[in-house]
Length: 396
Image 1 (cartoon, rainbow, N blue to C red):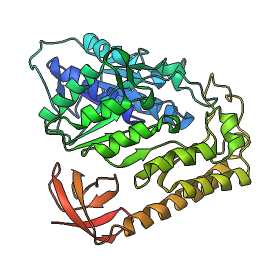
Image 2: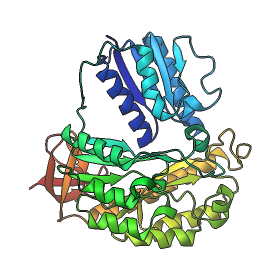
Image 3: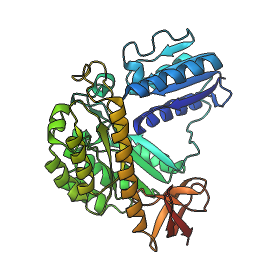
């Protein structure tokens, strides 16, 4: 029996990758422990900094344990982990094959359990992987491959299993979630949302991230009509300047973006923005701030532009680092103010909060709450005040 640990960097899909590896190793009879003999690092390559942190994590782990497996997006980036110690194995395989490879290499001691659940209130269920589009800055199609979807039957079976394990909330994840299709069974994402949201015992269903071109009126209707679905959408903007969007290879204009997100009126909208993309001047950045405000976005994840190998813009990086840093700080302040305004609007109102950490959780629209209730509890709370961390609530 091996003692193992699994860590991950990056997005919710990376979290799902790590979860699958943990589950497979546990099913094979191994034990998760901080004093591990085997460590798996599921990596990210969306920025140079993400690769640096992934490499650093792998090197640290190699000093502590006998065997390290490097998996995930950065593992499939050629040369990213060259020169690491011999006890580090780079697993440059598609996500669907990674868990089986790691488990097979570690070696099973027998299927000692038929099923396993982890002590979590939220489960991430991958429904789609890969991307068949090629934005000029993005390395993900190289490392994740073309878009592909799981069958609706497999997805719905997993959701039922996660609910039976005690998960109160399920998050549907994918690299390009809106591309989900099970043509044989007649499922698109909207129909999957309706079916998944109707799973007996499921308290809440959320979507991880959605490209604006996939924000259809049918999908919004499915979300509004299904009682368990959270009124929250994360829709990457990347830039609020049309010239920069064209340079990025994005397939929409600012006008299109604003028209599409308007379909989700009343939802809590969050987004990603790349700061300092080649050619972004001060006027272009000001247009991004204006677009964020016009869309009614609250939380903005700001990513300073980082050239990625093998992409169209790999050789371009025209905005100085200090300018990227200053613009990122301005965008975060802008986002903090927008979040604060939304939270203030909830004072005196009640919401259902899923407590996922001691004293903290998320409301129905994914606004953060501070509530004194047990981890895993779904509590109805009334907003009494607002802090820098979120909405302070009193359990009803």
